[in-house]
Amino acid sequence: MDNHKTHNDYDSEPVRYCAKCYSLKIKYEESIDSECCADCGSSDVLEAPIEEWEKKYERRYGHKFTEKNNDPKKSFIFKLPLNKLKTKVYESESCREIIKALYPRFPGGLSRADAVILFFDTLIKQNRLDELKLLLFNKYKK
Image 1: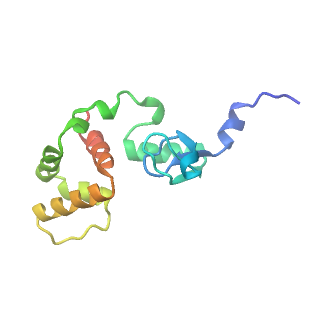
Image 2: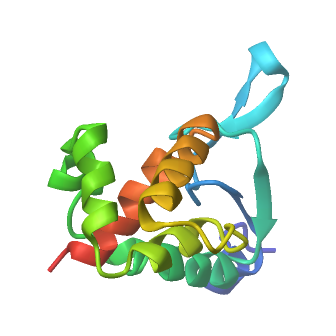
Image 3: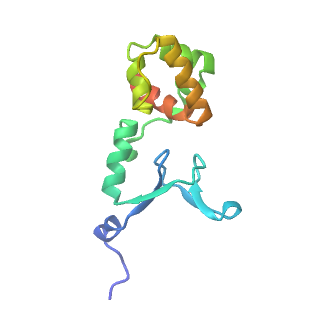
């Protein structure tokens, strides 16, 4: 029997990925006796066929994993101080869509200012600022 796996054999095996940032860098962390993401630290790990993970990754980040052409963490969006990030969201024509992208059931009926304040309060409490930055990075990159 041949010990070499074919390309199709590898593709048929599911991948383990971070449910928060979709990273494939999953490691076992002894201190918590569990797996976690080496990129963001989340312990929410999912498993799926590689094709399914690739589709999810592309929907979230706007490009295929293998086509990544620049590091979003080095972009101007990631370097914005919190007050300027709030202003960018507040002044955006798609302010409500940005909020709904991260919180689909976000309460309606709030003024723009109140919505942005509540949005950022929730983002900070749930440690999701990087998700907002990635969303904005994909929206404004050229």
